[in-house]
Amino acid sequence: MHTKPQRRSLTKLLNMLQPSTLRFLKDLRKNNTKEWFDKNRKTYEAAKEDFASLVNKVITEFGKKDQSISTLTSKDCLFRINRDVRFSKNKAPYKTNMGASIVHGGKKSDLAGYYFHLEPGGNSFVGGGKYMADPDILKKIRQEIDYSWSEFSKIIKNKKFANYYGDLEKGEGMSLSREPKGYEKDNPAINYIKLKSWVAMAPITDADLTDKNLAKKIITAFETLQPLVVFLNRALSE
Image 1 (cartoon, rainbow, N blue to C red):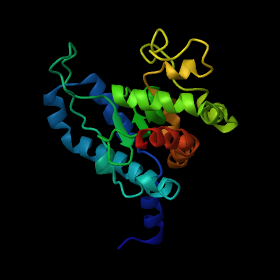
Image 2: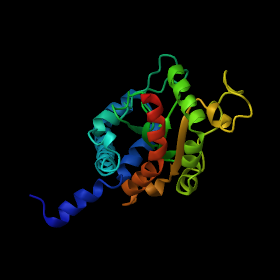
Image 3: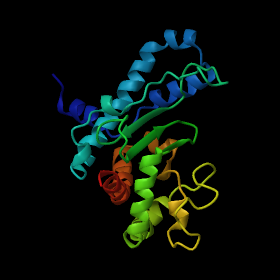
């Protein structure tokens, strides 16, 4: 039976990650072999459970705001740590990060949703949207942006969104080099119609990862992103 201080401590663990979880991923980066992983499997299981607990905390709290994800559990959202090396020059068997795609229907869903990426060493981030959509989904989202440009523009130019994310990601490989067929260059929405993904991301520092306000920070990021996710999913439902 837990004492009151112990219960508070266990609850607190759900709000942040443990240093041991970050340490495991850093060690895995240096020792990415099956032999090392097998020897440290218990440490991995503890790290996975720690990450899953945080994700469950975020789902429970943010699910009050976005009921479309409220019935999910971490099991529906977490990606396997094993890499698919069949078509890759990099034959390292394991990912050196943990990721959770929190989206209605689970991580394999075609809908837009939320994402948390844990990768110590300054590579962690939070965000979401719709990444690398299939052709039919691309068409639907582009049409919705074109038809509802005023609404879409207000979402991405909203002060809270702009302060948190800046803009949607427009880096290498994220956009077509020219406007898609059926759209004119002078379309006011053309820079967003040309996108192949509609995602926003914000960095999470290593210090944030073990801070007691980590869950709150992730939830704030998701709340800021929610109007975009709702807009994108409306396009897919029509």
